[in-house]
Length: 295
Image (cartoon, helix red, strand yellow):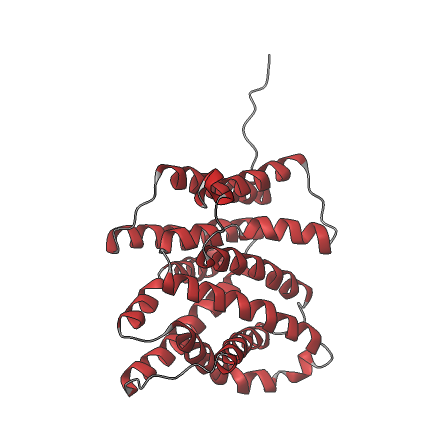
């Protein structure tokens, strides 16, 4: 128990930190900081902070640049989409749609890693997808396209699942190098977008610019490393249960501080998604429903 107490606590508080990420995002939004520039400054500052460590570890990733490029692409887009969706959208809705991530992980493991999908896993995947269908409006989703924020939240989960597969395939590469590639990829992607659309940069006060960069350096860097450090030191199933605190923290805080609520259909859909995550987590831990022996 003493061996795992530190990873449990670090992952627990890091997950809460992820669940509360919307707080600085909404505050910076209220101060006029635009979403794309916020992402560029926050992740760019964090990536620059880590760059000396990245180059110091080059002996570990030399010859594996193609993997780091994939992490920059998948992890970069995942963070970009997640931040923009939380910045612009309803916190609870975004978080639940993002939490389809285990579904994409299962499907990705089956398609690319040859992992087996049994009957119970098919049921949980279908349950989670049914939950997402309800959150998106049920049959009304066929009358109009989902909002771009819904697509960003779902796409973020898909990209994180792909990023996690590459992370698992590069165990010999230090976490710091992979996180730096992810942060750098995020800044690069949003930078390309800003240049492509020729976005005008408003005249922000130095305090807001510094606060945005501090968000990347102190908040995003700490919770990202905390999550990775905890996950690598705990069983996958136990880590999955703790990470659910991200969703709990987001839902509770958004309900209390923003007054966000869910319609009945969204509530049922959210329950299906979280239920599917819990079933997969308990299966990972080897927990099975108790069966009473017949006499």
